[in-house]
Every structure is written in structure tokens, then in C-alpha cells.
Image (cartoon, rainbow, N blue to C red; front, side):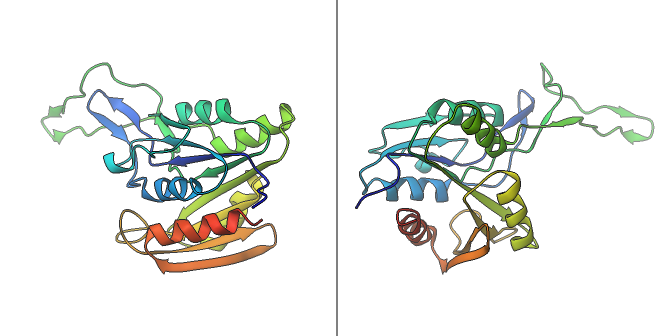
Length: 225
């Protein structure tokens, strides 16, 4: 098979943004989808670079990948992805990076404080993290990287197609893979439905299937585009 790319970067799992030494902001992503996608690419003549956040332990290493790289924060994820970009690269951004981080991380564990009226609560001030895929698009243009195919994911609780297509345009993607998430949907071991959108709309729908089968079907689609 004559593939259009020689290197595949797959990102996986959630990032963490620390509030204090024992608490952090993150999300419910297990890393399974990205892990399964990276595994599926091993059967093709490409270099597989697997970049993962705080996945479940069983999804933290893809045996056979050229590199397994671990990151913690969204900024680390961005920097690691940019460092691996080169000509003839497919990027599959299946990670679930935290969109916000605390403006300041407390040096010590934040204690509960009480007054005569009871608990004072805790007010966190957050700032936006960088948009990794948007910065990838800018980096590719600035450095004149050739033949760069970029695929994002949109995990949404409602209006999937609307949000997915907006992200595709805003982030300079070639395709975006949408799925509906929530309690009992999309995260972990549950079966899911994937909808692949391109610039003109829905291109392909896969599922409902286990994530191993979804990943296989998605990879089969990507190697033929």
C-alpha cells in the first residue's frame, strides 16, 4: 500500500493541571481510543509516535511504536507534538487536553477554612490553555511542513455536528472525528459511535462498536484518503 505519510503521531488520554500538590483539573478520558488507534497503525509501514497523558496504566505504552512519550499538562502536550512534526506526517489528536489551568498552583495543600457562618468554599481563577491543534496549524504554515494531514476529535454532549464542523474549520483540520460523551457514553470501555466530518460535512459513520473495532475502521479510512 502506497501511503501518503511516513510518520503517524497519535495522542491519547487526559492532561492534568494542578491546583495544589494533591488536587488537579482533568477529565474522564481513559486513553483507550488513542491507544487502539496507535496499535492499528503498527500493521502499516509507518513510524508510530505515541504521546499520552494520564491514561490508565494498560494504555500507557504501545509495544512496537518508535517512541512512547508521556506528558502531564496541556502545554507539555503541545510542545511534544510540535517537536515530532515533520514532512509526510499524519497527526491523530485523540487526547483529551484540559482546556483551562489554574493561574497559580498552590505550593501546599489548600486547607478548608471555616468561619462562624460555616465553610468559606474555594474560588479558583483559571486561564485558557493553548489550543494545541490551532498552534499545530500555525506551526505547519510557519515552518512550511509539507504533506501534513491532521485529524482531531470532538467529544460533545450536544449538537455534535455543529461543534465538530466549527472545530474543523477553526483548527485547520482535514478531518474531525465526533462522538457523543457523558455519563455512560464515550468514555472508557463502552461501545461508541464515531462520525467523521470533512470540510463538506459527514463523510463516514462507524458503530456502535467497541473501541478496538472503531479504531480499526478509522485507521482503515485514514490510510486510504
